Image (cartoon, rainbow, N blue to C red):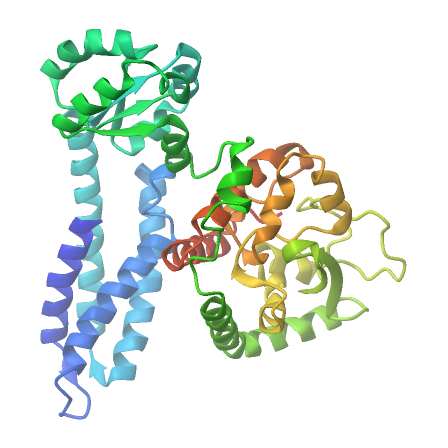
Length: 432
């Protein structure tokens, strides 16, 4: 990504320098703003088409198709953006810049991938713990390698780890040592920690390492103290008033921008099938409080509401209307939830609000109610990582990621989730 930014910065500056100002005069900030806008628009196009997704690195024909999508969108956006600033760029130069940028990105990615695959030094992570715990981590070897890490078992306890310590250190320095909690009470643990500190090696608990590595919490009794009765309760670190104000302002801006589209969708829903354009459904919010959630109707209207709504519906469900299938694919049916944010029932980002019947089923899982410490969100960490779980069988995975969000909620984390949500909507992934 850094190579892309360097190229885009240099090439965009050259492109803008060779362009003309429409009115013959411009403020000093116009041309730098135009160059910066090109960099942002190209970077956004590459991101939204999934070209920065390490979990699914495209190759060959798929890479070329995604590049065509990204640069087609970028060319149109760049021309519109520059004209709004009063800068005229010859279309031939824009297309030439796009072609050169695409060639550079493909060449850079191919080179970096070969270099990393053959010679890139992985960060060595020492592991001290039982074989079963190591085997569970080893199952996720692909994820660990994507992050540039190499896990090295040192032993099942501190005694074994110290015996293999010097031998392993001859190969290369460890980036950090991960220790299973079962080994922390060993009598030689203090000496081991001191030795690691002298060598400048960070020691981390296995639960903390797994939490950061997989983006979810291990479900267990520790969650009660960590989330519910700890000295720093989740979301208290954020000023609650500021968080609500941020959500209110962002939802208001989004609602104004989306209002023309929402009007079109509402008319289309009404014309496509009889019934109201919006429907309201009971959901469970913060601290178990129920509220009415707004959505565009995507199914044929039935005056007799289902006694037990389904967890999800298939893409080919015969109850889904033609317009409903389209708006569900891009998650546009959820736009009216911005009204719930303005009312204070929901946040932009947070755990998914469940129907009371589904919530009652999931409450059988231990620690489920801890997710109710936060306001539910239009999008959330579990939604972008679990692709809208198809059944209650995957409830523990959803819960683990929801609790991870409750523990680590913050502005930077929210912005990352929002960016991933936009990518999912445009690529129509996880539309269930």
